[in-house]
Image 1 (cartoon, helix red, strand yellow):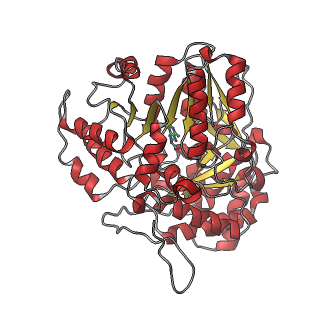
Image 2: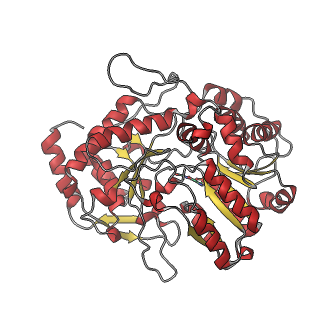
Image 3: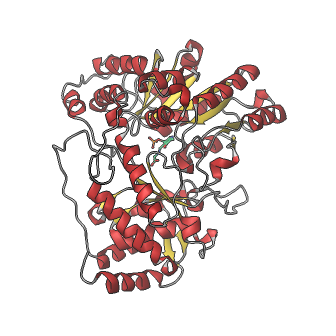
Length: 482
Ligand code: F0G
């Protein structure tokens, strides 16, 4: 992959696309932002976009679509059964992911529901590099448990280890020996491990996981939602693959898994999801669950227009100029914030820049949700909406106790080809100011706590009048600037 060098000035990521459709943004005054936080229970999920300036909540369903994707949507074949749009997608899955059997589902967590329904029985254990929120919720819903097997570097936000998403091979084998292979219906590996900062695994590691799966005859499931980005980082960081194309790297990864599933809200920059395999028996086991939970087998609960966009988007995953834009912008954002002393997860991962709230808000106890508080504070001082990824996103244990997260992060998502570099510079500016005023940030407590996936709709309040004090300092420093 070629580098574009600048002759004068700093090296900055260069956009290899042009913007042809735009959406106006609104930066509302800080008083309105405080009101919006109060109305939304200090939970960034509950803000509405009319109050949000830069929406860095997630890349899920928010990546910019290409002209070719939009064009394909216009030609969708509306049919309940046997739609031609489905066959295009099936071919794209085979061409890009190398799997011939494809089951469409309405989004990533629907794939998790199907897999857990088919394979998890009460008392089962699912080893994985790290959980994702919806994955954990489905596994526990069906009576299973999760065990996370990262190497220590994975949890160390300051380590520059290039493959923090690697699964701990010795611990994996120990776990299988202790719990018995018969209690482990599958091993799950997540590409670009989301909750530890979008950190990749190496193919070397995946091969080792595959060898263990073979030795004990356990299925290997790959969550491929962020597959393209993991492949890009393998290209940059794993010697054996430095001259390989994204397509070759992707196929090497998917070949090692028995089942590949994904959220198309991420992979393919569209909306939907899927499960694919080359194993006919697995296909037959999962097939009847699609009409039960999703829709007929040729649409799976997805609009046919999105199916067309998915097919084109999957092929575009092989285009390095598309895949590298977000990780390159993230690397720029992480470096700029790091240069200003803001504690960041390093090396820069994918999906977003991850701010280390455990360090920035070390004066806030974990049961007052330091990452949730930092996300709320950042919105207050900037209109930037990030996402808490820490204790608030965890679920309570069986006895109702808080489970304190290993990391307290605020994720600033950089969806593909959505933001400009000046917007990224604004993020650097406001986040740096907030870091310098971090002592003013206080904790949060629940006023409404839903029993499942509480971070989505939960309502919180500040433990003191810290938001007013932070607003006063903002006004003192910024005058009448928004
Ligand atoms: N797996 C991973 C690794 C994910 O990041 C997500 C979603 C899912 C599964 C579930 O997919 O949302 O289509 O049902 N991640 C989003 C995020 C929600 O913001 O990171 P879904």
